[in-house]
Length: 166
Image 1 (cartoon, helix red, strand yellow):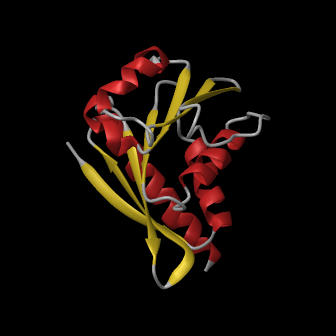
Image 2 (spheres, one colour):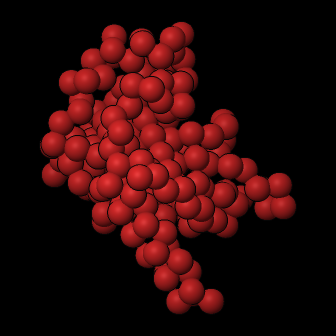
């Protein structure tokens, strides 16, 4: 079972709205992998997601720290694999210790260690859109049954919310 679906966000504020909508669907144990070039909106998405999940802390990119933790009703973990020398280095970060039912893990540059992420992961690939420098095409990908259902619900809700605005 595998699905891949795309949505479009037209501005940073829409990226925030998209993250807030996803926050209403995530649950403890979820791993969200983010893929995309520098400046594509991965950190902004995570900031909006974690705000919507209830953290009052300033969410910053863990590019140098590699892992940042935040508290809300769940433990929120923000990882960044950009500076890893090898995919196996995620285990030096204590990666496996964060995979628990009371934690939501968001991983920037997830493609650097994709083979070690759980099959239940949800991948979001952010692409720049040449015609509009503020727009992003986001591809959602899932392989497990729960993740596929999650992606289908996200895309359905997003399309519904966009059609109401038009």
